Image 1 (spheres, rainbow, N blue to C red):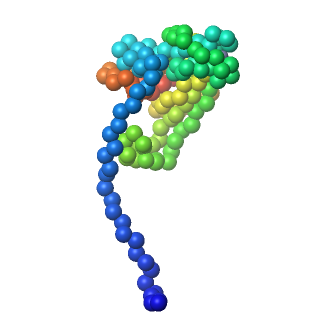
Image 2 (cartoon, protein in one colour; image 1 turned 45 degrees about the vertical axis):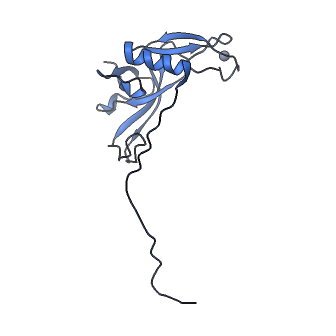
Image 3 (cartoon, rainbow, N blue to C red; image 1 turned 90 degrees about the vertical axis):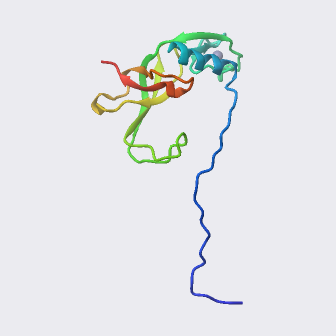
Amino acid sequence: MTQTSEPERLVMHSGDAQQPFRYAVGRYGSRFFMALRDEKRLLGIRCPRCRKVYVPPRQVCGPCFERMEELVEVASTGTLVAYTILRFSFLDPETGKQKPVPYGYGFIQLDGSDNAFQHFIEIRDEARIHIGARMRAVFRDTRRGTLGDIRHFEVLA
Ligand SMILES: [Zn+2]
């Protein structure tokens, strides 16, 4: 057995791995993203039992375990109910690159919905960001049918 004073060196490789994939977003997801892309409208779904509206739509009401089928339009405005401002960069899973900071991320209760919708929030004028702030969605001119079709939410003037 040989003793060495040199630390063992690990072999390191670096590079990019391409992992393209496609997946179905489901019936309600498809309707949600098509309305967002084609009409800049936000769709929710209403529970037939408790009448709560969820955005984005999903199949089952969590509290009631009731199957939901009634798609309803909700506003692209709402109230900021929670937020954070990120000041430390990390790898953005969408790009694989460091995400520029600072940026805001918030939970917005859209008018006509009962849950909070999560998205980026504009923080250029940070003094205007607060719980209870009225917000509006800012849509991209070119939309692809993703949540990125909303650039961010900003405080209403
Ligand atoms: Zn319900």
